[in-house]
Image 1: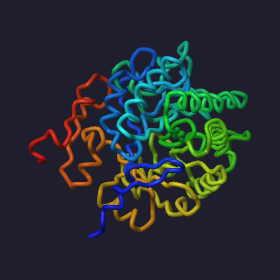
Image 2: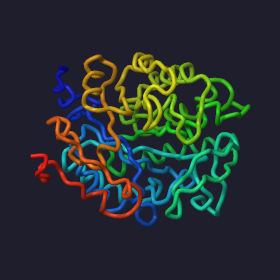
Image 3: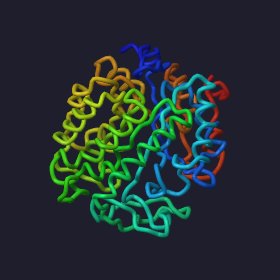
Length: 366
């Protein structure tokens, strides 16, 4: 049997020391208060899970244009910064480390969420075959418009400013959301990007916006505080790419030159099969000199074996963290994991958010 101890030993993430190799993946919960400010419950929620080696806070829009779902938090106003400061203080008081995921959803939005009812934006005017959560219901996304080339520097600057705001709010760093069919991923994939300018066509051109954003964020807050999430073969939110290996080998080569602290890779389909499309994730691991965070379908056994084989450095767990605030402790003791309540995933208050019991308070697990 493979020794699991290494998963729970301290390790380094750039200049940070993490208490273990377990990462809480970003999880959208749709519980922001008025003004898209993190609620006071968010501070309790994240601090309950601070035993993770690294927390990556939920996807957070960099602007109103970047919002795609109701009641998701922002990081572009002072009240939002102040709200996030309560979260980071609570996590740091528990000895935790926390990054913020920076988000622009692109075409995965609805006119009801956009300023003055404007159309969502995208690399090309191709409607996504997906739904969004708005007006307390899941409904079809709206038809997008294609971004003009002179608008793209503004989006890069929104990411830059959001990263600066995150550091002001006390985060240890940020994760750029370049995955799951949102704006940067829409530019990467040729199923959603049919542009004929400098941001479309070739592997290099389709990667341009993601790399410009990453360079700007790293310049603003430091490469050692900058990570990025990628999903090379996930069809989430209707994206598809004809050349994922060539595309993402190139992207990771360029990210390695930027010396950012980590890549967080969704291996396979988001919340789906790990082998949905043939892809050599080991190639990305070998091309990147810093930390590789593996994501998708990991449990204790798989994480342990992949760590022993040197295939990843850190391992991200998503939904198990919802119903198991003490997931690290449960994994370490090989305890039974609690099941989440699907009815309370999105929106609402404390129920299904901060009221899941810890192992020590459930007699059945003693």
